[in-house]
Length: 250
Image (cartoon, rainbow, N blue to C red; front, side):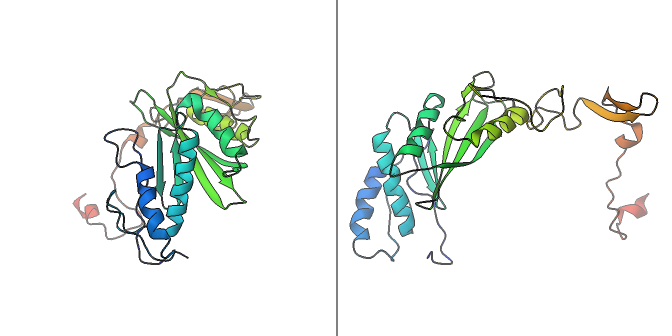
């Protein structure tokens, strides 16, 4: 069980940009000798500026070093923070990496619980995709991250993980990331004929169209967004705060 009151710090980090720290293999050679003495004591790691190291993190670091040794060209970075292992890989190696993590006997990640997307607007590789995998047998989680621009098609992994079919539909609908070889790529959250992708950072908050029920036509009609003039006046007063001093100034 983890000790309380001790802050866990990142270890075994290989950055994607900038100067690289000490390799993870050097870190493991120092920790393997100290781990033989006592598995309950916290280890000293001056190479990466780490003060305290938990035994569970050492185990994760050993496993990460094994994966990096078997797939050196597929992995550009590995980080371990708060028992969460993250693997960075290029887009063309994302699908082979997920297939490897599912079938290898030391990983055996049979479940895909999450496909998160983050919009780095203004960057050449705008979207960051994060595949969240779970291993119930070994009680382990891992994230596989990759970057893609607006025009590149991402290979679908629905043939590897069945849950990816719905997750990729959601990412396509909200962010506009296109997944090739998807069996049924469609919008799942927005309405028919919806313009744009609402989770992009350049999408307006008010949207482009508004809907209302027309009594004469007896149906729902779509119209361009029209902001009422009274909505443009703001007094910034808190209606729940009766003693607001700004009310006396009026």
